[in-house]
Length: 353
Image 1 (cartoon, rainbow, N blue to C red):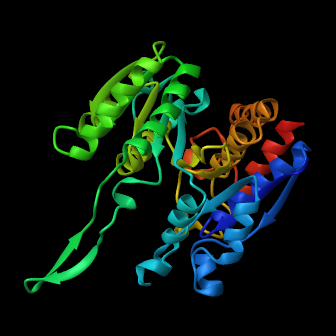
Image 2: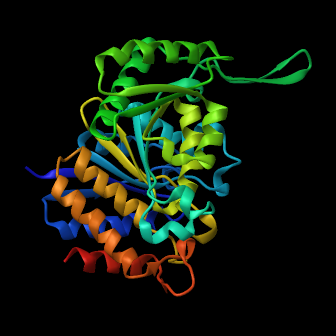
Protein backbone atom coordinates (compact mmCIF):
# COMPACT_ATOMS: atom_id res chain seq x y z
CA UNK A 1 0.00 0.00 0.00
CA UNK A 2 1.31 3.47 -0.90
CA UNK A 3 2.41 5.55 2.07
CA UNK A 4 1.26 9.16 1.93
CA UNK A 5 3.40 12.06 3.09
CA UNK A 6 2.21 15.63 3.47
CA UNK A 7 5.18 17.91 2.69
CA UNK A 8 5.09 21.37 4.27
CA UNK A 9 8.13 23.38 3.11
CA UNK A 10 7.14 26.40 5.21
CA UNK A 11 9.22 29.57 5.36
CA UNK A 12 12.80 30.80 5.05
CA UNK A 13 15.15 27.94 4.21
CA UNK A 14 12.31 25.44 4.58
CA UNK A 15 11.65 24.94 0.83
CA UNK A 16 15.38 24.45 0.13
CA UNK A 17 16.01 21.82 2.80
CA UNK A 18 12.76 19.87 2.31
CA UNK A 19 13.52 19.62 -1.41
CA UNK A 20 16.68 17.67 -0.59
CA UNK A 21 14.89 15.35 1.84
CA UNK A 22 12.20 14.67 -0.78
CA UNK A 23 14.92 13.74 -3.30
CA UNK A 24 16.37 11.24 -0.84
CA UNK A 25 12.97 9.69 -0.05
CA UNK A 26 12.15 9.37 -3.75
CA UNK A 27 15.50 7.69 -4.43
CA UNK A 28 14.78 4.91 -1.93
CA UNK A 29 11.99 3.42 -4.04
CA UNK A 30 9.86 2.34 -1.06
CA UNK A 31 6.47 3.42 -2.38
CA UNK A 32 6.01 6.91 -0.98
CA UNK A 33 3.45 9.37 -2.33
CA UNK A 34 4.12 13.02 -1.49
CA UNK A 35 1.90 16.08 -1.76
CA UNK A 36 2.87 19.64 -0.84
CA UNK A 37 0.81 22.20 1.12
CA UNK A 38 1.24 25.56 2.89
CA UNK A 39 1.98 26.20 6.56
CA UNK A 40 3.20 29.21 8.50
CA UNK A 41 4.10 32.52 6.91
CA UNK A 42 3.76 31.16 3.38
CA UNK A 43 0.17 30.22 4.20
CA UNK A 44 -0.50 33.62 5.77
CA UNK A 45 0.75 35.34 2.61
CA UNK A 46 -1.40 33.12 0.40
CA UNK A 47 -4.67 33.02 2.33
CA UNK A 48 -4.30 34.88 5.64
CA UNK A 49 -4.28 31.71 7.77
CA UNK A 50 -1.09 30.04 9.12
CA UNK A 51 -2.84 26.64 9.12
CA UNK A 52 -5.44 26.71 6.32
CA UNK A 53 -8.21 24.17 5.92
CA UNK A 54 -6.67 22.58 2.81
CA UNK A 55 -3.51 21.86 4.79
CA UNK A 56 -5.52 20.49 7.73
CA UNK A 57 -7.30 18.07 5.41
CA UNK A 58 -4.11 16.88 3.71
CA UNK A 59 -2.32 16.46 7.05
CA UNK A 60 -5.22 14.40 8.40
CA UNK A 61 -5.24 12.10 5.39
CA UNK A 62 -1.48 11.60 5.25
CA UNK A 63 0.40 8.87 7.12
CA UNK A 64 3.18 11.32 8.03
CA UNK A 65 4.11 14.98 7.67
CA UNK A 66 7.52 16.34 6.61
CA UNK A 67 8.02 19.95 7.66
CA UNK A 68 10.77 22.44 6.81
CA UNK A 69 10.49 25.42 9.17
CA UNK A 70 8.12 28.30 9.89
CA UNK A 71 8.43 31.92 10.94
CA UNK A 72 10.53 35.01 10.39
CA UNK A 73 10.59 38.70 11.24
CA UNK A 74 8.43 39.48 8.21
CA UNK A 75 5.35 38.33 10.16
CA UNK A 76 6.26 39.49 13.69
CA UNK A 77 3.91 42.49 13.61
CA UNK A 78 0.82 40.45 12.71
CA UNK A 79 -1.90 39.67 15.26
CA UNK A 80 -0.81 36.66 17.32
CA UNK A 81 -3.41 34.33 15.78
CA UNK A 82 -1.99 35.02 12.32
CA UNK A 83 1.67 34.50 13.12
CA UNK A 84 3.41 31.53 11.49
CA UNK A 85 4.13 29.85 14.82
CA UNK A 86 0.39 29.49 15.44
CA UNK A 87 0.32 27.22 12.41
CA UNK A 88 2.98 24.98 13.91
CA UNK A 89 1.28 24.86 17.31
CA UNK A 90 -2.02 24.29 15.53
CA UNK A 91 -0.92 21.24 13.55
CA UNK A 92 0.71 19.70 16.63
CA UNK A 93 -2.51 20.10 18.62
CA UNK A 94 -4.79 19.11 15.74
CA UNK A 95 -2.94 15.85 15.04
CA UNK A 96 -2.41 15.04 18.74
CA UNK A 97 1.37 15.03 18.37
CA UNK A 98 2.17 14.88 22.06
CA UNK A 99 5.60 13.19 22.02
CA UNK A 100 8.59 15.03 20.60
CA UNK A 101 11.74 12.94 20.14
CA UNK A 102 15.00 14.82 19.59
CA UNK A 103 18.12 12.68 19.25
CA UNK A 104 21.33 14.54 20.01
CA UNK A 105 24.16 12.46 18.55
CA UNK A 106 27.62 13.65 17.55
CA UNK A 107 29.10 12.23 14.39
CA UNK A 108 32.80 11.43 15.01
CA UNK A 109 33.75 13.55 12.00
CA UNK A 110 32.20 16.64 13.63
CA UNK A 111 33.76 16.41 17.09
CA UNK A 112 35.81 19.55 16.40
CA UNK A 113 32.72 21.50 15.34
CA UNK A 114 31.44 21.59 18.92
CA UNK A 115 32.34 24.58 21.06
CA UNK A 116 33.04 22.16 23.92
CA UNK A 117 36.23 20.15 24.29
CA UNK A 118 36.40 16.94 22.29
CA UNK A 119 36.86 14.84 25.43
CA UNK A 120 33.59 16.21 26.80
CA UNK A 121 31.39 15.52 23.76
CA UNK A 122 33.06 12.62 21.90
CA UNK A 123 30.63 9.70 21.66
CA UNK A 124 27.65 11.83 22.70
CA UNK A 125 24.28 10.12 22.14
CA UNK A 126 21.26 11.54 23.99
CA UNK A 127 17.53 11.32 23.31
CA UNK A 128 15.34 14.14 24.62
CA UNK A 129 11.65 13.29 24.97
CA UNK A 130 9.56 16.46 25.22
CA UNK A 131 5.84 16.64 25.93
CA UNK A 132 4.46 18.76 23.11
CA UNK A 133 0.76 19.58 23.48
CA UNK A 134 0.37 20.75 27.07
CA UNK A 135 2.12 22.98 29.61
CA UNK A 136 2.29 26.78 29.53
CA UNK A 137 2.33 26.93 25.72
CA UNK A 138 -1.29 25.78 25.54
CA UNK A 139 -2.63 26.55 29.02
CA UNK A 140 -5.65 28.79 29.47
CA UNK A 141 -6.33 31.49 30.56
CA UNK A 142 -3.66 33.57 28.85
CA UNK A 143 -3.44 37.09 27.52
CA UNK A 144 -2.44 40.70 27.96
CA UNK A 145 -4.90 43.16 29.50
CA UNK A 146 -5.04 46.38 31.46
CA UNK A 147 -5.25 46.11 35.23
CA UNK A 148 -5.04 49.03 37.62
CA UNK A 149 -3.86 51.34 34.89
CA UNK A 150 -0.99 49.21 33.58
CA UNK A 151 -0.51 46.30 31.20
CA UNK A 152 -0.71 42.87 32.78
CA UNK A 153 0.36 39.67 30.99
CA UNK A 154 -0.39 36.13 32.14
CA UNK A 155 -0.01 32.51 31.07
CA UNK A 156 -1.11 29.29 32.73
CA UNK A 157 1.07 26.22 33.28
CA UNK A 158 -0.81 22.99 33.84
CA UNK A 159 -0.65 19.25 33.22
CA UNK A 160 -3.14 16.46 33.79
CA UNK A 161 -2.04 13.15 35.22
CA UNK A 162 -2.97 11.47 31.92
CA UNK A 163 -0.74 13.80 29.91
CA UNK A 164 2.22 13.08 32.16
CA UNK A 165 1.64 9.31 32.16
CA UNK A 166 1.50 8.96 28.39
CA UNK A 167 4.71 10.94 27.76
CA UNK A 168 6.33 9.15 30.67
CA UNK A 169 5.64 5.76 29.11
CA UNK A 170 7.06 6.93 25.77
CA UNK A 171 10.26 7.92 27.58
CA UNK A 172 10.50 4.71 29.62
CA UNK A 173 10.01 2.63 26.48
CA UNK A 174 12.71 4.61 24.68
CA UNK A 175 15.12 4.16 27.60
CA UNK A 176 14.38 0.43 27.64
CA UNK A 177 15.43 0.20 23.97
CA UNK A 178 18.63 2.18 24.62
CA UNK A 179 20.81 2.00 27.75
CA UNK A 180 18.16 1.78 30.45
CA UNK A 181 18.69 5.24 31.97
CA UNK A 182 15.96 7.88 32.19
CA UNK A 183 16.36 11.34 33.72
CA UNK A 184 13.13 13.25 34.38
CA UNK A 185 13.61 17.03 34.49
CA UNK A 186 11.29 19.29 36.49
CA UNK A 187 11.20 22.27 38.87
CA UNK A 188 9.29 20.60 41.70
CA UNK A 189 10.86 22.78 44.40
CA UNK A 190 8.96 25.79 43.04
CA UNK A 191 6.15 24.64 40.72
CA UNK A 192 3.22 22.46 41.80
CA UNK A 193 2.71 21.45 38.17
CA UNK A 194 6.09 19.77 38.13
CA UNK A 195 5.64 18.28 41.60
CA UNK A 196 2.81 16.30 40.02
CA UNK A 197 5.16 15.52 37.11
CA UNK A 198 7.72 13.99 39.49
CA UNK A 199 5.07 12.10 41.46
CA UNK A 200 3.62 10.50 38.33
CA UNK A 201 7.06 9.57 36.96
CA UNK A 202 7.79 7.80 40.25
CA UNK A 203 4.46 5.98 40.01
CA UNK A 204 5.25 4.72 36.50
CA UNK A 205 8.78 3.57 37.36
CA UNK A 206 7.84 0.17 38.91
CA UNK A 207 6.36 -0.85 35.53
CA UNK A 208 9.90 -0.60 34.12
CA UNK A 209 12.25 -2.35 36.56
CA UNK A 210 14.93 -2.52 33.85
CA UNK A 211 15.09 1.29 33.59
CA UNK A 212 16.91 3.40 36.19
CA UNK A 213 14.89 6.58 36.82
CA UNK A 214 16.56 9.71 38.17
CA UNK A 215 15.31 13.27 38.67
CA UNK A 216 16.99 16.61 38.08
CA UNK A 217 15.86 20.21 38.50
CA UNK A 218 15.80 22.07 35.20
CA UNK A 219 18.43 24.68 36.11
CA UNK A 220 20.85 21.93 37.14
CA UNK A 221 20.02 19.96 33.99
CA UNK A 222 20.91 22.99 31.86
CA UNK A 223 24.26 23.22 33.62
CA UNK A 224 24.98 19.48 33.43
CA UNK A 225 24.32 19.40 29.68
CA UNK A 226 27.35 21.60 29.11
CA UNK A 227 29.42 20.25 32.01
CA UNK A 228 29.12 16.49 31.47
CA UNK A 229 26.52 15.70 28.77
CA UNK A 230 27.45 12.02 28.40
CA UNK A 231 25.95 11.27 31.82
CA UNK A 232 22.54 11.37 30.11
CA UNK A 233 20.87 8.67 28.01
CA UNK A 234 17.18 9.64 27.77
CA UNK A 235 15.80 12.90 29.20
CA UNK A 236 12.05 13.45 29.60
CA UNK A 237 10.51 16.80 30.44
CA UNK A 238 7.60 19.15 29.81
CA UNK A 239 6.91 21.39 26.86
CA UNK A 240 8.65 24.61 27.90
CA UNK A 241 11.67 23.03 29.61
CA UNK A 242 12.03 20.62 26.69
CA UNK A 243 12.00 23.45 24.16
CA UNK A 244 14.88 25.17 25.93
CA UNK A 245 16.97 22.12 26.85
CA UNK A 246 16.74 20.48 23.43
CA UNK A 247 18.00 23.64 21.71
CA UNK A 248 20.81 23.90 24.25
CA UNK A 249 21.72 20.25 23.69
CA UNK A 250 21.69 20.70 19.94
CA UNK A 251 24.72 22.96 20.11
CA UNK A 252 26.76 20.21 21.76
CA UNK A 253 27.05 18.73 18.28
CA UNK A 254 28.44 21.92 16.79
CA UNK A 255 25.38 22.91 14.77
CA UNK A 256 21.63 22.73 15.19
CA UNK A 257 21.66 22.10 11.44
CA UNK A 258 22.52 18.46 12.15
CA UNK A 259 19.64 17.54 14.44
CA UNK A 260 16.35 15.92 13.37
CA UNK A 261 13.15 15.51 15.36
CA UNK A 262 9.94 13.52 15.38
CA UNK A 263 6.59 14.48 16.91
CA UNK A 264 4.34 11.46 17.34
CA UNK A 265 0.72 10.72 18.20
CA UNK A 266 -0.45 7.66 20.14
CA UNK A 267 -0.60 5.51 16.98
CA UNK A 268 2.80 6.28 15.43
CA UNK A 269 1.68 8.97 13.00
CA UNK A 270 4.24 11.73 13.08
CA UNK A 271 5.41 15.13 11.99
CA UNK A 272 9.10 15.17 11.16
CA UNK A 273 11.17 18.35 11.06
CA UNK A 274 14.69 19.62 11.67
CA UNK A 275 15.26 21.09 15.11
CA UNK A 276 16.45 24.42 13.68
CA UNK A 277 14.37 27.38 12.59
CA UNK A 278 13.69 29.08 9.27
CA UNK A 279 16.98 31.08 9.16
CA UNK A 280 15.56 33.91 7.01
CA UNK A 281 18.97 35.60 6.90
CA UNK A 282 20.31 32.87 4.59
CA UNK A 283 17.08 31.90 2.82
CA UNK A 284 17.35 31.60 -0.95
CA UNK A 285 21.15 31.56 -0.94
CA UNK A 286 21.52 27.78 -1.33
CA UNK A 287 23.84 27.48 1.67
CA UNK A 288 21.56 25.94 4.33
CA UNK A 289 22.42 22.56 5.83
CA UNK A 290 19.80 19.98 4.70
CA UNK A 291 21.17 17.10 6.79
CA UNK A 292 18.84 17.59 9.77
CA UNK A 293 15.86 17.42 7.41
CA UNK A 294 17.24 14.35 5.66
CA UNK A 295 17.81 12.71 9.05
CA UNK A 296 14.25 13.67 10.03
CA UNK A 297 13.08 11.76 6.95
CA UNK A 298 15.08 8.78 8.24
CA UNK A 299 13.22 9.04 11.55
CA UNK A 300 9.96 9.00 9.57
CA UNK A 301 10.99 5.78 7.86
CA UNK A 302 11.73 4.23 11.26
CA UNK A 303 8.93 5.44 13.52
CA UNK A 304 5.92 5.79 11.22
CA UNK A 305 6.62 3.38 8.36
CA UNK A 306 8.66 0.73 10.23
CA UNK A 307 11.27 0.72 7.46
CA UNK A 308 14.33 0.26 9.63
CA UNK A 309 16.61 -0.86 6.82
CA UNK A 310 15.78 2.22 4.75
CA UNK A 311 16.24 4.48 7.78
CA UNK A 312 19.69 3.03 8.48
CA UNK A 313 20.58 3.39 4.80
CA UNK A 314 19.84 7.13 4.89
CA UNK A 315 21.69 7.63 8.18
CA UNK A 316 24.63 5.65 6.82
CA UNK A 317 24.71 7.82 3.70
CA UNK A 318 24.93 10.96 5.84
CA UNK A 319 27.83 9.42 7.73
CA UNK A 320 29.62 8.58 4.47
CA UNK A 321 29.19 12.14 3.20
CA UNK A 322 30.71 13.58 6.37
CA UNK A 323 33.53 11.05 6.24
CA UNK A 324 34.33 12.23 2.71
CA UNK A 325 34.73 15.76 4.05
CA UNK A 326 31.61 17.47 2.71
CA UNK A 327 30.51 20.36 4.94
CA UNK A 328 27.97 23.15 4.71
CA UNK A 329 28.99 26.51 6.13
CA UNK A 330 27.65 25.88 9.65
CA UNK A 331 29.95 22.87 10.16
CA UNK A 332 32.80 23.85 7.88
CA UNK A 333 36.41 23.68 9.00
CA UNK A 334 39.67 24.15 7.08
CA UNK A 335 40.61 21.27 4.84
CA UNK A 336 37.03 20.16 4.24
CA UNK A 337 34.93 20.41 1.06
CA UNK A 338 32.51 23.33 1.34
CA UNK A 339 29.12 22.42 -0.12
CA UNK A 340 25.83 24.22 -0.62
CA UNK A 341 22.37 22.83 0.06
CA UNK A 342 21.91 21.10 -3.30
CA UNK A 343 25.49 19.85 -3.40
CA UNK A 344 25.05 18.22 -0.01
CA UNK A 345 21.86 16.60 -1.27
CA UNK A 346 23.73 15.35 -4.33
CA UNK A 347 26.42 13.83 -2.11
CA UNK A 348 23.85 12.00 0.05
CA UNK A 349 22.12 10.62 -3.04
CA UNK A 350 25.43 9.38 -4.40
CA UNK A 351 26.24 7.73 -1.05
CA UNK A 352 22.86 5.92 -1.11
CA UNK A 353 23.81 4.08 -4.31
